Image (cartoon, rainbow, N blue to C red; front, side, top):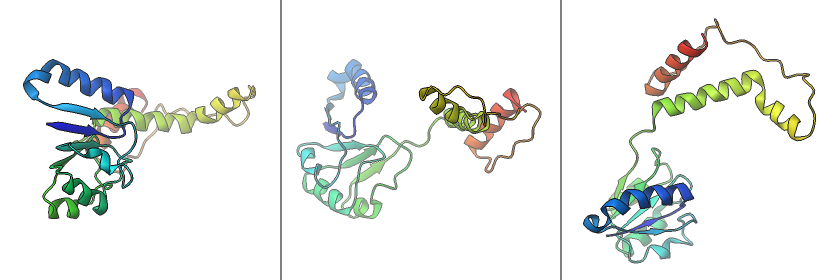
Length: 172
């Protein structure tokens, strides 16, 4: 089976190659890496692939899916949880399977949310830009202490709960 991977970053290539490398002989999967995004201009490069693997900035609209069908592609695999860049109706109509990552690590997303909270609270983004300009003034960089504060979290799904645990343990 040939799998065309679009919008490939070095870490994608390293990870996918290492996972496949150990099982290459038994899997029969051949990876074809493309650094550019899939779209109407690049879809012809899937010729010969049985499936494609795309990311968030790839355009998988009706025209692209029609071309994929003509090239014999049977599956669209997403390296992301979202699938808003894929025309699911066109894929279903042309009997092309679509699969996505079921979820990201809630803890990783929550940690990033907490990092953004701290970035805004402590104004590190502003401080970073000033230092790059050689400005070491502290004016306007005063933040607030989060310790002991009440934090509101909208949504208590997996990510919201993970954020609440981090905030309770580390700050509030």
